[in-house]
Length: 149
Image (tube, rainbow, N blue to C red; front, side, top):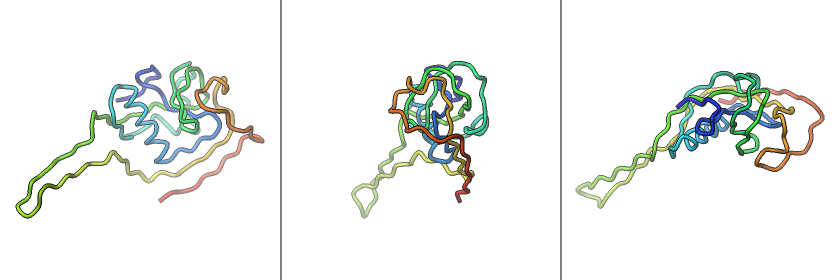
């Protein structure tokens, strides 16, 4: 599934603090898939870097990773997400001669070696209209980068 900014396929963005790492990628994929009617989402790719890319500058439905809330409006930086979505996780049960039953579940996880980037600044058109509480004001834009491994 690829996000397009509709309520069923929201784009991914942020309100005040951007961290583009495995956790935020997984969050965007999960909310994209849930909005599309699935239960599990796995991140595949994005149209750019969440903290620095602009999708099209138009008003859309967004999943704000720092607020963990949906937002309808305009943001400055946002990306489209490509995710693999499924209805349920796979569970199998096998009866073995020496045991009663064994159950295994395949997790919905992503593995990625990306650099975590954090940006703190104002990114939404009207931060008061997001679903979550407003974060305390910051002294201005700051940028830091850390490598995860």
